Length: 236
Length: 295
Image 1: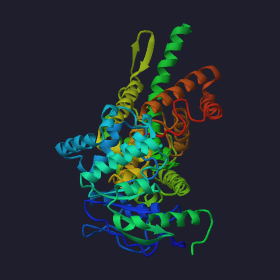
Image 2: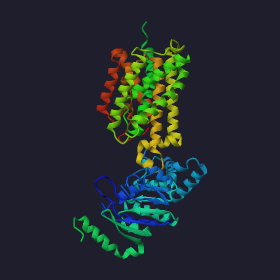
Image 3: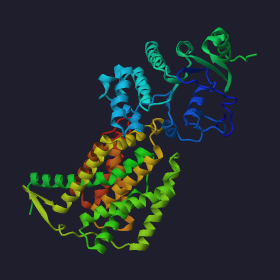
Image 4: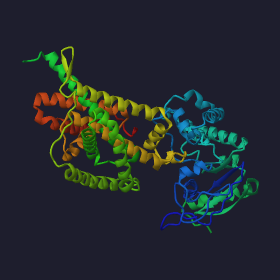
């Protein structure tokens, strides 16, 4: 998969996300993790390659069309609609099911069961929530789309350690509910804590992947290598 | 006959409020397109003038009441909006400059076309109520102005409820805040931008029909309405509908009192002086907050 006219940011990427599991993509700064997520979501356009979800080719589709096929993404940046209430944000996530009031109500109840902290804030403006609460709202809103697969792009970015723990507790809850999740995060420790499968991305290429248990032993070597790269060294 | 100061004040205030309501409706189309599509539609005034001519001709040719004719102006404006969006706007929304240039070209084309079709002669729509007025205590109110104000406020109220209480309206507001995020929720951004453009042209058409009952108009009057809309937008801080109504009222008040004390010839000078002063003192608008943009 490549994107952009001149610079090849991603290449030789082949990732399989197992149904009802959490697949994490880890890698150093600038490896292309977020680029990959945005490409899968349709925000960036690849030059070539295939993105397939349940036998349906998604590449070539607009981001909104991919949502209708069951793909939902939580962006790395803050993406709540700040001038709208928490309820309005959630209802926007339910665009796909807006004509089915019962399904919409049921989905809202399910989502609020997972994120009970949002319930008392339903009529507050999203901008009044803390950074961590806004992240919860983003994940909750993505769940309102009733996704077959949920993409989480750096869910811990910009959050305090306490909030990171909370966010990952919710991700773990989703995992236990058999949600299919594709996760990217710099926080490798937290990533590993929830992942079933792990892929490693370095300089735009997948360097390996597999069950978490198979990769755990080589993790410390990987991180040492990335730290070396980030300090300006050339990896041999 | 000299009026007592309090009656004069009341008369001016009533005129200002009625004028402000119309200004709000004149502006709202521009605000919607800017908020949702990030397009500064330079041809906005031409759509208002087109609405005035459409109302004039439909009313004249079909011998219909001008106020009722406005209902027929809406589909005509919608058709024009659809054609313009398809030919000139869609596909340019990713750029900020291209639609400005494109809509400036549209301004010239529409102005020239209307001049060729309908000449530069000033026209106005005369209704059976044009010369009628009612008295509210000591204040005399021309009925046609009151009706135009009422229609404007009804149109703006309906729009407000549409944007805040319906799922499509909510989605349009979401696009105005963050179109990329909206697209990741399955909201059809481009389709709703097209819808918003057409809706805005319809609102411009309605406001043009109302303006034609209050003032004489000709094909070259469009830029004046565009500039008035800029002033209202600047006053409201590109905010929501209540802010646009408040912005329209402030402009109406400024113009009415300004032209009374400085002379009617300086009416526009007052408006632009308000714009310049505001940009210097409070560039986010009277009712706007930094970084907040909504429709």
